[in-house]
Picture 1 (cartoon, one colour):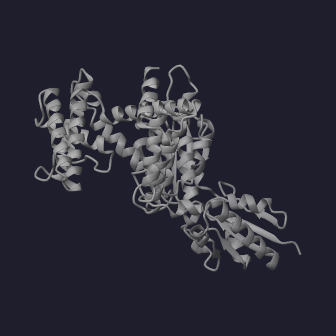
Picture 2 (tube, rainbow, N blue to C red; picture 1 turned 180 degrees about the vertical axis):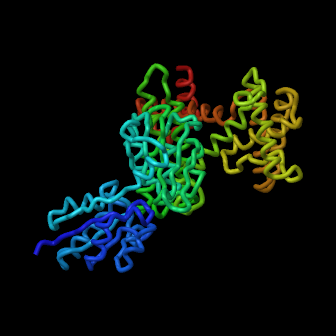
Picture 3 (spheres, helix red, strand yellow; picture 1 turned 60 degrees about the vertical axis):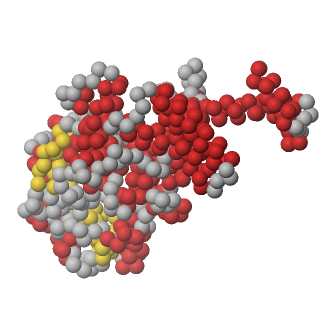
Amino acid sequence: MTARVVIVGLGPGPRNTVTQATLEAIERIDVQFVRTKRHPTADLMPKATSFDSLYDTLPTFEDVYSAITEAVVIAALEHGEVLYAVPGSPLILESSVAQLRADTRVEVQVLPALSFLDLAWEALGIDPVNAGVRLIDGHRFALEASGERGPLLVAQVHADWVLSDVKLSHEYANGNEPVVLLHHLGLPDQRVEHTTWQELDRVLPADHLTTLYIAQMAEPVSGELARLHQLARTLLEQCPWDREQTHDSLIKHLIEETYEVVDAIEALDTNDPATDEALIEELGDLLYQVEFHATIAEQQGRFSMADVARSIHDKLVRRHPHVFGDVVANSANDVVQTWDDVKRAEKKSADGASSASTFTGVAKSGPSLQYATKIQKRAADVGFDWPNADGAFEKIIEESAEIRQAVALNSDPETVRMELGDLLFSVVNLSRHLGHDAEQALRRASDKFRHRFEQVEQLALSRSIDLANAPLEQLDALWDEVKKQ
């Protein structure tokens, strides 16, 4: 006996769109399966076994469709004939149907059915052939829409995160491009929402009966960020190490990748394009850290990469009123002042005028020299500062004397530590007054020392001098020789 699978479609939603052939197959065939019962007409098959649980237990859609195929085929081999039903039409964006048709163990009969497409064309008022509309799977939008200008009908946008991925994949969108969201077509709660690219994931709660129509793309779509986002999801679902990570556990990696970006920037050579490759790689590592944190939060239902991108976009617009508003800025200093004014206004609005501090928003966990520079600048912004570098020079002399005295008096370690900190703080103040970044100044001094000492090591090696046992006078002589070179 030949094993047979009859595949039917439950139509796009309204009961009057289910074909008579489908109803007769439901009545005739005893062993029934339905891909999902999350469909308005799925109640026509009350005795059918659904595969909804697979979506919650298996890591990818590909795994779900493979499991469905295997279950349906095994049942057909056992019972001779089974019925498999899917929402809409079995011939439109149904991967499980494609897998069943390709399975040589069973004979497959597909009964034609009405899809969501006819309802979409009616709601949009267009002829898809004359308009040249292309149908695209929302899960593969970044790849399939690459180079397309539209019009596009995007199916499988069954969740807000899918719409967010579609939006993020359009690298050149300005946000004002018109789009249409088609929701629950043919049902009493049908919605046809005309909105913009910027708002497409905020208008309504997307589900399996939601479709997106894009009349025209402003520029070709770049899928790299969307591919990275999908990779982050896959790794968090399937990699044991990634699954164990939290925001806290990733802190050290975030800091490490940031420093490696700095190293790559310091190594850039304008005459050597090859040095760009290191910066590209390190920027990619840093970008993935941002993506990693956003994807963890997305899995927790807290926020997504779209929220991160939207937040920085909107903040940059607010803090550039000289570009997007009527504020005038003629110099870089004017821009910095405007930025600080807007930032203070934001903090005051968020925290309340009574609780906002001069130092609100300054990260305590950053490098100490950077932290000292920032709080000194904040204090200077409200007038607490010397008028020029002379005061900073005098303060270094004063603090040097105080730490010398603390050491001479054999003060307790905490007192010495505090006096040492005061001296470093005063040096940072001098750096700021001289217009130099203390962090970079110390980094370059450290690099210079390292380079010279490595030359001392090479010189000692060439003369068979054991550095560890050489007297200080000999080491100083080597140092001076290298310095002269």
